[in-house]
Image 1 (tube, one colour):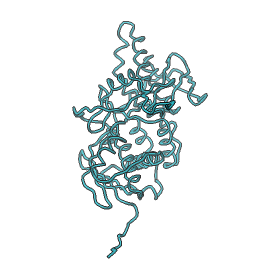
Image 2 (cartoon, helix red, strand yellow):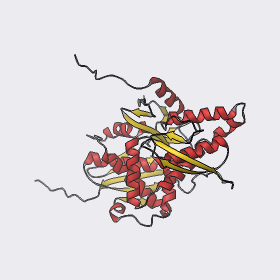
Image 3 (cartoon, one colour):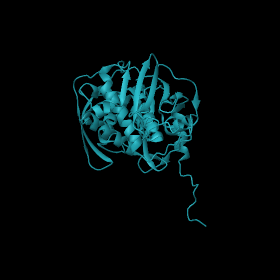
Image 4 (cartoon, one colour):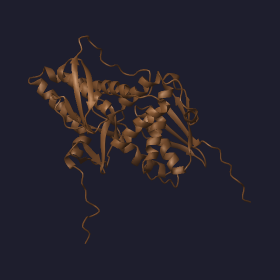
Length: 358
């Protein structure tokens, strides 16, 4: 008799139920909360690699950009909670809601009255989320300094800011950044969460939830100073109908998302066109990435179509990674915007000539 059974289910049923009660998964792939904020699930190691690849591609550290993007994105997400403060014992209730949000998103269990937090998040991102949290809780602006004491422990020092700072605005310059509407096609997902001492995991891999707005702010905030990318990156991505103002940041995010997927031990096997649906659902839809639809495919080229969606850069990067892993070839991707639709044409970067064996 084996000492360990193969089918032991270690997931936390209560945590998983709370999670999927708070967030819904759309047929088109968006993972949204009740306020129509969209989210993606990231494994900790994949997120850290995404930052590494992005910094390498744009040849610049982005710690401050990550911090500001995280602070602004979470401030928009939790803005509606401000009304709780006016209630009886409002600050206590608000603190409870914010603690629950951090726990549900997998960011850690923290008392925001303390100057130290324990988290699985990248330090500058955790600092941005922490800043927005304490500013809402205390109803004032702070200047924040932080130092990482260990892998999961961050110390903060905050000082008051006398001048009034405006609230962050929606990113109107990026056409896919926000959803105008969400379809009512909610689907079930078999992703189950496992409780950890710090945060939660999926199939044993430490994971957490991140707002899609965060990634789009990183693209916007970094595009301005990225004058030129390496030619070996440019030749892989052809953007049509998309503003050049943020194209460098977008290409860097596309390439980073692709490289992160290829760096992991993900098995992808496609026998025919019908296999694309289940492959996309397994690797993309279940984690909040948009669901591209295969339009047509021939011996060399695959053409997909998808709606504008906040997770677009991450979704397209992962899609091209899936294609490269399945075909064993480096891809060239042509992305064309047509009003509210994105057309994606993926083909080999190198030309292949078929020899006539007759």
